[in-house]
Length: 351
Image (cartoon, rainbow, N blue to C red; front, side, top):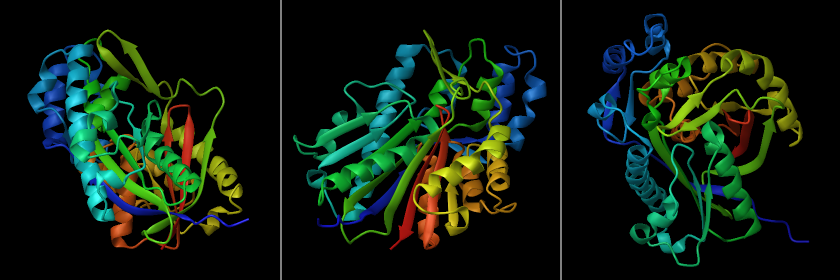
């Protein structure tokens, strides 16, 4: 039997929308908007300043958040903003790979912050020049784990179709979930953390590329559906953080990571660098503790969080992009936590 060629990442691009949300201005606006609607706002306000965020980006201007928005208005903003970001980041990934849309055989699209049918890649087909026979694989519901799980799915498609160019794009517009009606503690935490962004890469089985996808794994904890997700009502999505994620990560990530690595005949000591989804400052600290990395080890994660906030699925790929520009070590593991509650990993070998 002929051995399959390794799947490699040919290119990686990231994109942010143009509207800046400096954290100090967000604090002022949130105080004005939310304090009359949430009696305990003053007790929660410090989360804005301890989140480790300097600025974030949004597809809508600052004033958009000052008036109530219903589901159709949010969906309209999502569709317009997500298609634009999808096209921009896909064009950049294709250009770096030296390809055009016509060279793409399959497209994996991940997004959990809005619903568009037809999905984003279909809406962008004309602009990007995708072929009419290109496979389309839109995926919803992965949340913050979507960057790693989506890359895993794209790599598996590429492995199953040697020579095929697979484009993976994730787009998340978390800011559109901002709520004026009956805000909860979770909504306020989300307001302090979330930003918008997109990432894309091209993968193919072959010799080119900056990293080989050497392994993938997931771990879903039983009876954890209430940790993270969306609640849905006529106004749109509302965030669910029913349990404190940092203590959970501190307690549970290491044994789960050991199991996922063991499935690839690896141990924690075999990993030169963990590239983690920075869900927030406290989550970063919890991961450093759980994986025994040392305080401050996840420096790239802190940089991305400070510059962009938590963008959900694309965030881990923003971290990967910074890491590869500074030089990837021999073996790294890209990892993220998401609703389910699930840990998702992609093991990379530097080219």
